Length: 101
Image (cartoon, rainbow, N blue to C red; front, side, top):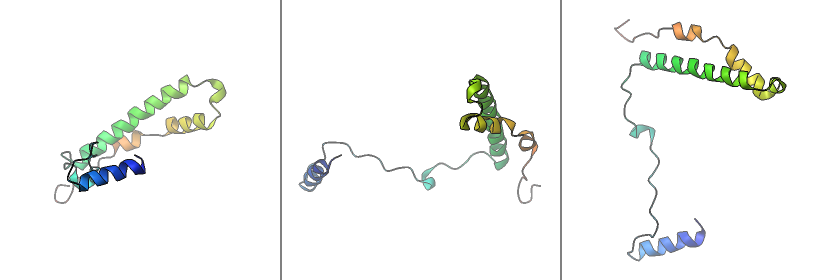
């Protein structure tokens, strides 16, 4: 929006009229989000599963990458992701919390 458009909206708003363009809603704050309904353990397992799924997608991307690009920054980053051992992350069970261990 240009300065002239902002000025016109300001004048119209202060003259008792409504602005011609709709106003945007303010961004959602963290405090406005609904509370988590899942336990930390469930969230951990979901995050670990997501990492494994992403690693599989990156492996497919690396396999489809032309051989000439395997030594590029993209190829090296993909290889580093594929080489990560995520089995240990999947087997970890976080503590349940105070009084429930």
